[in-house]
Length: 228
Ligand SMILES: [Zn+2]
Image 1 (spheres, rainbow, N blue to C red):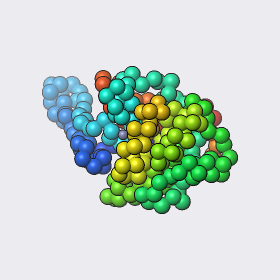
Image 2: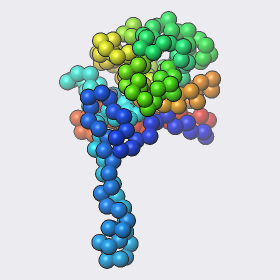
Image 3: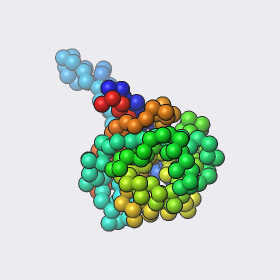
Image 4: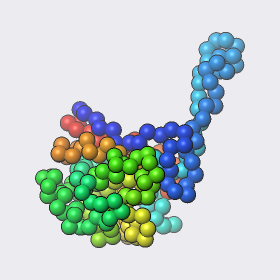
């Protein structure tokens, strides 16, 4: 079994979506303090975390798209371990829309079928090109509504992308989110390292969310597993 890590590293002040709260990762107790507290028996260090539910590599819950969508704690785990493919869209210009024709051509070039009940990871090259510069937050290419509909029609449960939003920044991105609700699919954002999957054929995608009550998303440790 070979595992490819597709998750961004999280750390204090790691980049978050424009307007969202910061990621805070601090020391609650260090080893020295804990050692003294234990009356010199043994010291155990611990840290604390505060972050937006859309921080780092994460999956959007349908609740993000509308008040009646299911929250992340109710998102079916069956949809979190699924067959996947990765397609090469690195030729699409920054901020441009990825169309159904682009997807169709990229799937054809990949030489693999879109897995029913699975996921399609869109390697736009955006993370590789811009992270962690400020363009990472603004300049991504992404699917338009027609491309989102095309993906849903292939029978996927979600798709993933190596940027902070599934569509290019602006109205298109908002309407792609609405389309996901209408089509009963979702998407995974801020993936990285998708280049490592290109040309390697199908894999098992695993991305399990935390069980946040009424949550609109959750960070996941996203991985692709080969030869499982
Ligand atoms: Zn999100």
